[in-house]
Image (cartoon, rainbow, N blue to C red; front, top):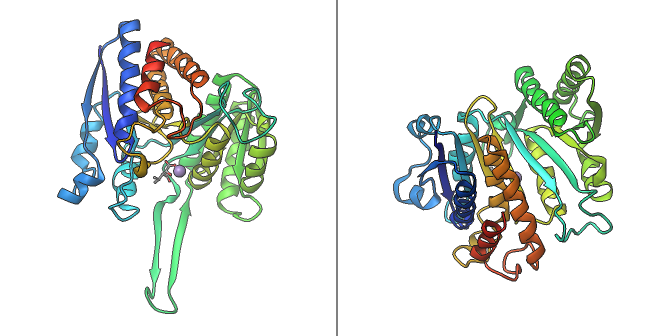
Length: 350
Ligand code: IPM
Ligand code: MN
């Protein structure tokens, strides 16, 4: 059966990097003789400005019939911040119940890291970010808005079910990854004593009972930022909540060579998952053939893995690693070649 893939190019440089990922998909599909169909969805800031439309409930229902979703980027400088983020990206994550945000932090050979004296052997871990709860649920409100006595609250929602399914995914992932078999809970138990108490109790209960082979560690989120720079080799798999996961994976992206190479997956293990480069839409680079497509190609690698095309995924990684040896830098405009040339290079070296 052909894999049914939904494609959301999105805003800014999204469509350009997605085009390179699709180029690589075409090449591996030919090599491994699998079929796929693509359908594009126009969920962009431009369309919103023209029609007021974002992602509708009908769109969500249609997307549920696909095997995977491939996303470029969201965010248009002409639209007020928050509208597309909520109306497209968060809408899809929540409506499709993609409760895991999986973000590998891997330094490939020949890629520059600002962390001196650390190489590919030291920078190789994965962040499992809870993706449907925490501060992202939008619970809260105003009191006396606009007055000098204004109060704004933004509540972090952590359910036992939501925390538990995320933790279980992380434990399973750590076991399957089979490296150091070490799972680190990243939180803030010293200050946020309700939410992180729930996380910590569930972490140890589940770990003790069902994953005795996995070593459990805990680190505060602020200290984790320090360790990412000082001792990244300390980590194997990290599990954390939505907000902390958002923040630490930007730092993770930087130590693995930048936003140009950082990929991620929004995963619903029982449903439809969505794969994307973790950087934004980079509006100032749009249409110039200068943006790095490796993050989007890495997202395609994760998508192929999800579809069960493991050999094809491994080949895409090989192609990415080869491209890294030929590129001058991972940064937009400094790669020593264009967006399309990087895509060609990966596709030709699978
Ligand atoms: C990310 C992004 C999103 C997030 C934004 C665009 C809503 O920063 O995918 O990390 O905060 O999750
Ligand atoms: Mn982010």
